[in-house]
Length: 248
Length: 172
Image (cartoon, rainbow over all chains, first blue to last red; front, side, top):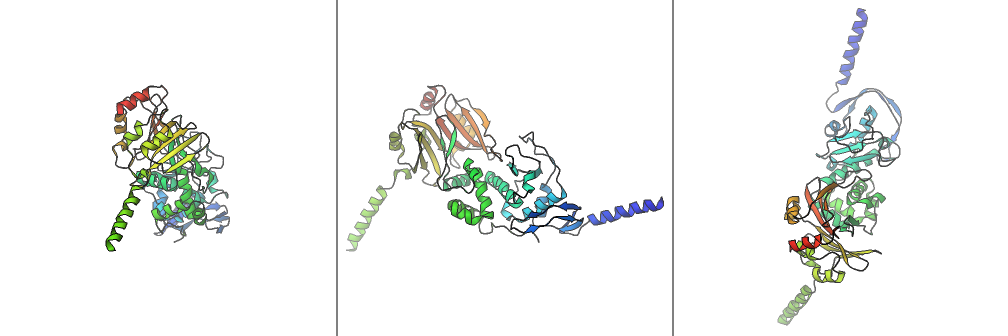
């Protein structure tokens, strides 16, 4: 009995020691990692990851507290089901965020939540509201690059944070001209110079999020399809607005 | 010879300045308000406001787009039906103007009774637009609900004819 007690105590000691990591590292519990591709095409194979101290990716202190359980306050999609973050998903999100430029570290972004399925579109990987990003199952599937999904949602928040003058400037430069129709509905005249993604036709906000996303993940395509948006983003964010490697 | 050259330069400069497009002048909210929905024609609007920066046309309507000469940004849009009669107007409020404050705009249209509603969520994001609408008057104020500033003021034919007329006479 006494031996069992000591075994229990020593197990507790080992466990608590293991969770105390050196500075610049954090504790990762054991998990099964599914195979995935990083933003740059690097293949990460499936593996049983053992518990270990992991080097903090760039921006860890900023992003880690924002990955939270539960659901956003007043979330309008009441049928969307909240899901718990797995160790694997948290690590992948931190890695993906570390790949993004510092300009996307937004003080106005409060939380990143996890839910199972989007009600709006069957394969929608994510949704963005004021100060909030929600990631769905598809964000972690092979259909999407997680860093690209996150960049798009953070770009929505950037648009919300732009000053009135900046929004007007962006809309004029990218030929978004509002008008009132005969029934008193606000409309936007579509420009004729192309969209980097079809859903950009919905609104300047969606178009902006697509353009910021592509300025990071497909700059040559953006420059070709929507050069005025490419130039505006380049001038607004500067030369450092580029993807970076996630490992320190 | 030098004097002749100088005179030529002055003459040339004067001609160049006088031929600047009229849309380089600053439009006012009063001017836009004074254009009566359902009555003003496209040519009358152009005569009053000057040539548009852009004309966007489809089968059923034409939209004239006007820019602000200082910022170069969108300032106003006039929508005309297929008979070229004015059916909609939009005024884009600039930063720092009185009309940026919702209370100021409501006070300007004090006879209107506004109903508030938010733009519907699209596929995957929360839109920034919040509307204050009075259908009977035919007026719609668009506010950015995140920075609380008025983005634009729009007019269309009123649900109840006559009220918009009363409103525009009150403004003038």
